[in-house]
Image 1 (cartoon, rainbow, N blue to C red):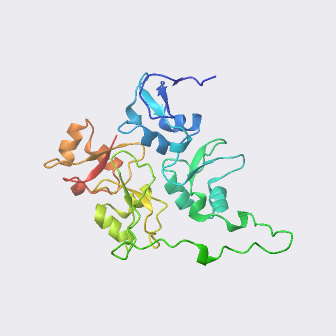
Image 2 (tube, rainbow, N blue to C red; image 1 turned 180 degrees about the vertical axis):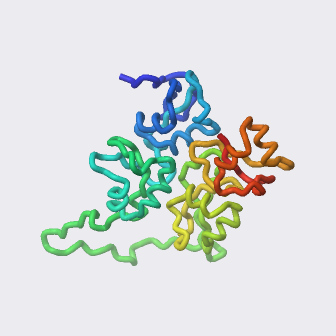
Image 3 (cartoon, rainbow, N blue to C red; image 1 turned 30 degrees about the vertical axis):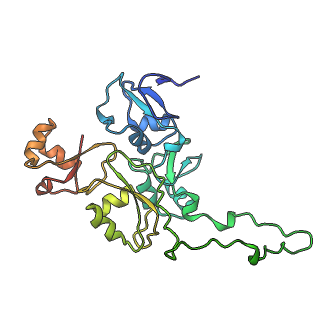
Length: 278
């Protein structure tokens, strides 16, 4: 039996996802818990949707499991789990776990809640890798003679063509899917995309600033981003717009805009800056 609110028709959603009719009192956090997904996934599969202003009767898409985490893999909270115990079991800090799960209360986990954790490939425990048993005679079979392995000739220029970058991540709306290039540093990425350290780290907790690997896929926030707008809409300030005119445009107050953007100075509300709006 389908849970209340779930519908099979209505809003056009990506393959594998279903539509959901927003109910009075719903929040993104409540929907994520009810349908075993994450707020992060809801934002990815519903680009441009402001969950804070949805009204009863509007429709959103419910992500299936493959959309649950932008990076890493999903983890379902079990009885007795705490934020600290999950982080310790995975060999990461609670700070990294929090970065992968924006908006999640560390002191209010519930059984069945879904969190995003590093994929096994990011740091798999070698102790969990099964050993290959020896044959009965105590020796592994000999490897094939290299002389019988066909040699692939080099092209005329003496070099094999470079393999294309094949990032496979799914990025939020407005973000750009990119790949780390050989020799790039973390600072190079920040300068290239003109974003703050905090914004890049929040969007890409899998990237280690001191150890970038060429070919690693990441989601670059929009140019000018200083912070990540978890659960809120983002907006790029246009020429001649100011804090005062933005308050009028979005029918709010200067104080509200400043509270939604705690990393920004009033003078930062200038052309090209990405801000969070309610």
